[in-house]
Image 1 (cartoon, rainbow, N blue to C red):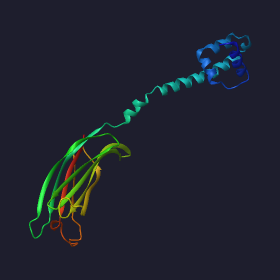
Image 2 (tube, rainbow, N blue to C red):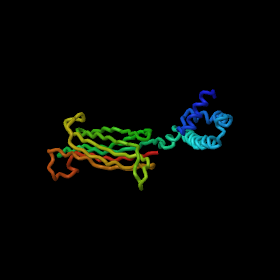
Image 3 (cartoon, helix red, strand yellow):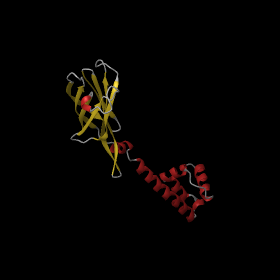
Image 4 (cartoon, one colour):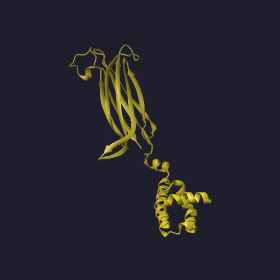
Length: 227
């Protein structure tokens, strides 16, 4: 440390001025402390003790800060991110086209819900379209991976829900929307969670009291699992 800088630091100490960051660095290197001990003007024992009292708390603070900053941020973040889930399942749909007085056109379909990988905070969907004669049913099954509040704790879970639209007209390409149904959002288990509902043609061509069996309708059932 040159004599000019040393004198500046000594004047600050004698005047009771607060320590600067540059002063602290000099202290840490040991140069300033040795200078204080060897300088004739600093024979006063109280001045040396003042230096030491200022140095110790700052050194402690520096060590604590370094320890905190040494924790890898990326590792801490990775530990809190839930692992990916693989979702999939199967679906069955029965469609009945009411053709009174002729026999109804009816058919059942089995559909595989192909496996999808879900990262936490994302969602996916399967779209299934099936038609019998003039009745077309479009079903959208949605799966999402997010937190669920359980006993006051946020737990990562996969949820599934579905909605179906029934169209009836002159052919399978009709856009005449006549019915809607679906299944509410609920948690999916590892072994598979079942969903079931019925979609009915509710157009004006039927009286209010007409039973489902005498209308166009579709019975939808599916199972979604998350592993």
